[in-house]
Length: 405
Image 1 (cartoon, helix red, strand yellow):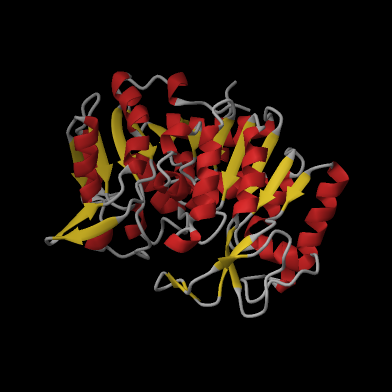
Image 2 (cartoon, helix red, strand yellow; image 1 turned 135 degrees about the vertical axis):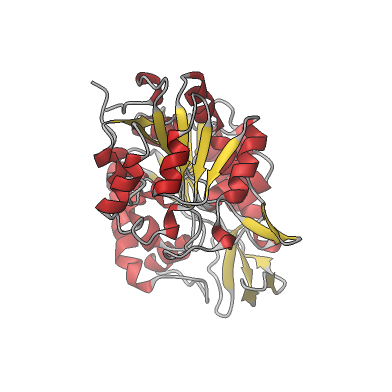
């Protein structure tokens, strides 16, 4: 069912509490904290613009980092208020308190179209505990509650789920609406052929996603260290590559399900391998590509897909009408191990006939570093939320919003 959105609500003159995802990276520079990536702030601008047009009195709340219930200047949202004002072209007030008399007074003083940002919700330990008293204090600030923080929607916290019990009118914002449209509708009713690219380190992290997508996809391409666990399950040598031996049975079950459903399940046919690899220092010893079909010798570690795999996968991606990508093909954070991931990013971007969805996490970083972020249909802002949603899990931050009548 479609959820109630800000388009459906009368907001003129009403205090509207909006949960946003402003968990942005900060660096200290000349004694001040500077935002190094404002993407998450920019993503909320359409929602804020529409709220202002509808005459809402906007109260924004968000978390940053993991302060564990204690105030910490390094994780204050104060720099976000400054940047939001610059990006939106309108003043943004800031409350040094999240709840209580100071926040209540500032919220009550708002005029139509004005914006107030509350301090980090996680400065209160009650936030992550979904404490009803804290949730009620948040609810006291507003007449309407809007959740536009898909990246935090998988958490049942006070500001993402609990507060909805204390505010009568509620809905979702435009960003949340887009996330549900692409990760929900576009995947559930994908145009065929539907090609899924899954990477990352662990089969255990992605097996529920794999299982869910085997019911929808025509082709699944498996990269990253996950591929070596699948190779191990097939009895192949993987050298000292990162594997999960306890997931071999799980991998075999996925392969069997793919075969039974007629889903093409493609593992790398060649790999970039190295003898020494230090992720912390971002260094590797000189590596080489295995020949297609060759196994990884003892003492060597797989860190990326090879050129023949890139060719095969590019051909699959080019035929697709829907592409979903979640997880890098290799250790793309290290230059020598990034070629495969960037080649896949370029292949996805090159298919302009398909709906191309980047499902959050490191895949988002990859398309940005590859310079093709503006050439895909949709980039999810969710990491863990994207995975859980693709698994078919109920997200508390979505479930607390009513369906449209």
